[in-house]
Length: 463
Ligand SMILES: [Zn+2]
Image 1 (cartoon, rainbow, N blue to C red):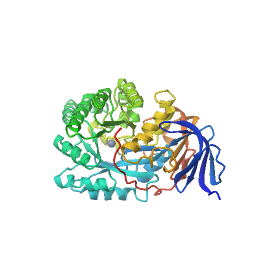
Image 2: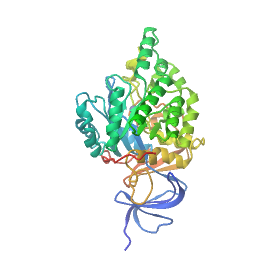
Image 3: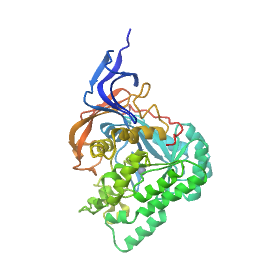
Image 4: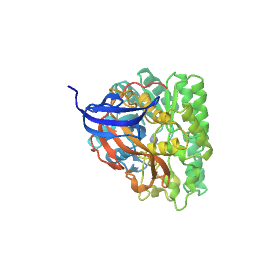
């Protein structure tokens, strides 16, 4: 007697990091159970994916939902942010649980677990961002890794968050010794501090000075320094939001020498550039994020870095703030503009509808950098990040012919703009399936807030 499946996705063109082929996918209890051509078994529901691409659900390993920053809070919480993720084809997020001053790491995990519980519409994990690294905090790291938080983030810049080099080095060592991974926000604090004060004194207050106060070398120097420390203690390192060609050169040098250094970039560094800060009427504030958008001449190297495998992942650094009431806090001084921009919903569409369309990425590479590699690096593979029997039934179905212009009104991000307004795409997600259930269809969320589960992550794979 043949079992009845919950769902069969029929006739789609399946894309993984290594293969493209046509097959049916049969799903039961949230998992992929059976794959093959022209399955004849029965199911409660059949989705016809003929002529469509079926990809592993996107994994966004860099989001900031419900995060206090600069006197305000990022405007998407775990409900709205994960609904937007789902509508954009992302089925897993790894958010940053940021240690409040004087909190232990265990307390930090509890605070962020509460933010997500009952709200998240897709599965979620947490990196622990350590901001106050006392000895007793350092001593918590092994237990935190054991509890499923196998990655940590350290900031080399931002007053109140940043750690000094000795701390970074110790954290790299202890994390590596216990099978975890350190992620670093690499920018040189003193370079930025010097330039911000200089521009302020010269009354240079507009958004463009945000970019000019954080030049490429402020990042590449810190990337180089972080790599040197990782080399010294023989630890792997993951560089978040790598944004410019100079940093990429440092990364390549280390990788070519055989060191386990990995990096992500973000859509904003691939599709937008420094000129956006010059938009009139304070609109440049929309793009104030750190690192800042770079000159156009970093875009091609970053695309090439992805294509050649020097950069392993594309994440969003989704950290939305409303122009009204939030970004405008910095009208009189760029350094008071909350740092961050939305992007959780547009990552997969942009990379497919522009990146693949314009032949910057192949389809298999798209899957690799948006799902497979993030799952491997952050200890979720093969439960997540691929389409295979026994993996979670997390899928996104793209219509490769669908023409869609990005505009704020089609998006679900809880914020009053998108940096990608007017971008014309060919190819768009038409359905998202998470844990075997359809959660987004034809541009609408049809899932359930709170259906997402916490993912206990295991040791990183070094790529
Ligand atoms: Zn970030």
